[in-house]
Length: 128
Image 1 (spheres, rainbow, N blue to C red):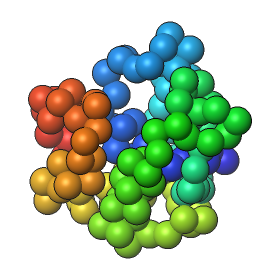
Image 2 (image 1 turned 180 degrees about the vertical axis):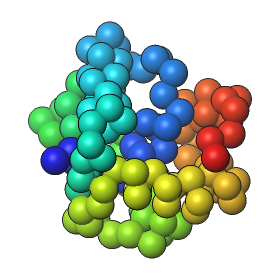
Image 3 (image 1 turned 135 degrees about the vertical axis):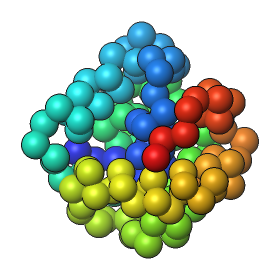
Image 4 (image 1 turned 90 degrees about the horizontal axis):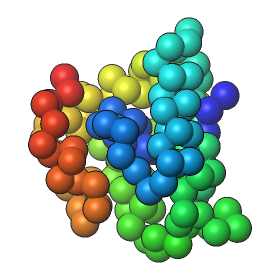
């Protein structure tokens, strides 16, 4: 079981090997490999820190120093995908919901408003 903040489903699909630190990047690659190279694992959508946050420099004592920004991203992602915190879903189903509800409808900029990584995501080929 992988624990994910809902908005990290967006980040995973736009990840190009950049991040906060080498440890963060390595952890992100590992999680992506588990999600993409395995037999479609289940994920649980969580509020607050998740498996990706474990190597983030903004994670202090299991609390995100980025304030309410990531909380907003999570809520927007959940709302658009019709999901809730605590839901357990197969990775590929979650990925499809994100693609249909956010990427194909061009809602990424609405969800990720003021994200420091948004420029990278907007300049990648569309994920559909």
